[in-house]
Amino acid sequence: MELAYFAAGIGAGLVVIGAGYGIGKIAAAAMEASGRNPEALGDIRTTMIIAAALIEGVALFGLVVCILLAVKS
Amino acid sequence: MKVKFKYILFFISIIWLFSSGFKPLFCSENISDEDNQKLDIVEKVVDHDYVDFYFLGKLYMPKFHPVQIGNIKIDFSPTKSLFMMVLVSIILIVVLKRAAYINTHNKVPRGIGNFVETIIVFIRDEVVRPIMGDEGIKMLPFFLTLFFFILFSNLFGLIPFMAQPTKNINVTSGLAMITFFTVQISGIRKNGFIGYFRSLVPKGIPIFILPIMVIVEFIGLFTKPFALLMRLFANITAGSIIVLSLIGLIFILSYAGILIAVPFSLFIYLLEILVAILQAYIFTMLSCIFISIAIHPEH
Image 1: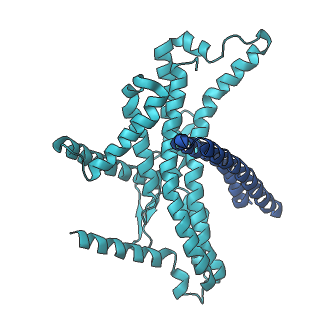
Image 2: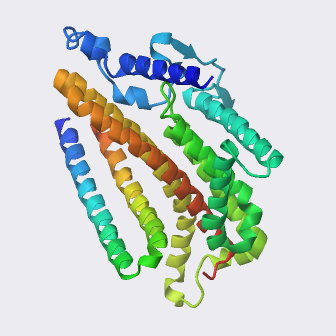
Image 3: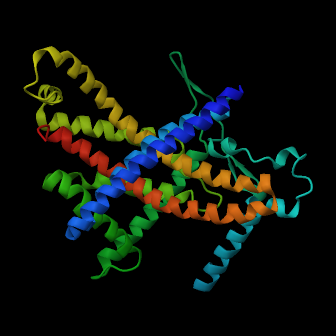
């Protein structure tokens, strides 16, 4: 039963690594793009937020599984 | 009138803080051995058949006899989420009626009419028109209903004593089901029954991967609304769980926990406002994109 806690902790960590990497890449690309073309800043920001929210949604799927693991044990 | 309202808000927030977060400050001796002092996070997040008003007591919902249809037993008795959903709907009707009244009777929108009009113009000009073009204006009431309902129910849980209806997976799956049927029906109406299902598979692919593509596209019909419902549900639930976990730090660290728990939970609370607006926006926009794909299969 302790293994479930272990798995939940490791899973949460992996989820955070993945989501952080994804959102970091998006932010880097958006900053580069807005530096090259400052007029398109509004459009870039909107698309960046949408993509970040999509990644966050996927990360939260994993987080829900981790919470279920930690609760069920 | 304004001053009174401010005092009431202040009073309510102080009582709320004392009743939930600051409890260990006054009874720190018997936290560990008292069983009812435990903070059960899952208990707070899941649905109940009562609404908890903490020190004011519990409001129990009426219980109905479950209805038997074939082998399935369906319980139609109302729960906390349904209660909150009805409250949100009443607030929505009142606010939007008021806004419509203000906007039709004044030349220049002001007050709450201005606020509502800003959102409507944003949805029309930034979401629906770039994605669907002018024919999307015909479906604008659907998107506005989705947006306002999700926005108000997400923000509703941030009020003390209240809970988000969207924290319940049944509510979000109902919303996603509405989107799913709207996508199918609008696609069939535009392209015809056979034309719509033929357009799911892109033209000009080799014959030997055709069976795989048919299966993949057919599953894709259902995964899109599933991702939609899970995203909304998981975002809202995770927000409440994080706030409760940070408050739970007080139970572990007692006095020192206040220094960590209060600023962090305030930060997450403010982040929740952003998440509420963002999730409503994303749900509306993705519904719009799915409908646009069903209507114009070439793009």
